[in-house]
Amino acid sequence: MRVGSERLNRAEAALARGRAGEAISMLDGNVGDSIRGSKLLGRAYLDVGDPERARENLARALRIDPSDPETYRIYGEACERDRFFDRAIDSYRRALAVRHDDADAARRLAVLLADLGRSAEAAEALREAARLLPDDLEIRHRLGVVELERGRDEEAESAFDLVLARGGPSAPAFLGRGVARARRFVESRPASGPADGLASAEADFLEAMRLAVDDPAPPYDLGWVRELRADRAGAEDAYRFALERDPNHLQATLRLAVLLDERRALPEALVLYRRAQAATSDPRIKKALADRVLTLERGGDPEAPTDSASPGSPTGSASPGSPTGSAPPGSPTGSAPSESAPRDRPPSRE
Image (cartoon, rainbow, N blue to C red):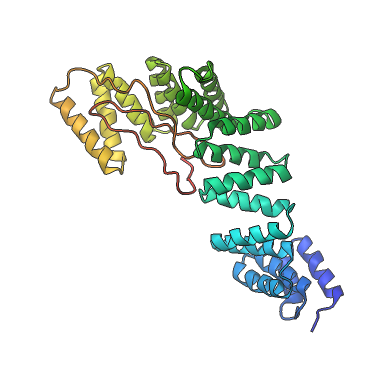
């Protein structure tokens, strides 16, 4: 049995107008062995939020014609809706195997791999999507984020450069580029690092602060860079800015406590150490903080810690919408090491 072309045309027109339910009423139980009908019915069920029924109809279309890239792409989207991510990835790849220039499939594959934290695969897929969609700045931004996660800072900087050049001022892009520039300097200093690496990174973080007035990430990263430049007073100011924006920002709390501890502003340092101790879920950090608090309360350790002069490079994962570059600076003797965000899963927005 084959559904008539007139009905298929009417169903397709209904879908185009956003009336998926109407399309379902025309087609459900009537598509038989029609590839077009099964595909339309699958799209309609996907539009009304029933990915399981969508997959049933799309699978029927693929059994009839296993070489249709659009059906593979829509099937992948239906799998993704139900969090069958491996099946979705396989479907997008099958679509691209049939049609190498399927930009929609390439984009969906790249975004999904990036969101899953599969950075090496995501970078390759994002580059291919960027080739097919040269004006898609979100793809370029995601590529920059993924390259940061992979530690490929020069490539990340190039991606963010392009986003800023084509898209204009953007706090996430300034933030990502600042992280990339600072890490390039840290990892290659002193001989071969770009001489202006830290100054240009600081400028990027300041610009991100101006554009994203509520985000604690830019002032936190500004504090990190100022520590690298041995500007302790400026770093304190930056961490205080971060805490004004988010009083629960654990890393800013820890770094400010350490700097205050170093210059023997112990009452405020103790308050911050205790706050961080209550906030952290890491037992190692909690114990280190408890030990430091006890030492200071007993009047011990008269000399300020000295091994935090060179904060570490940013390793916190960045969400596609906003690279945070959460930097875990080094911690002084007797103080708690900083926490950094895990890199093996799609990060949540801080």
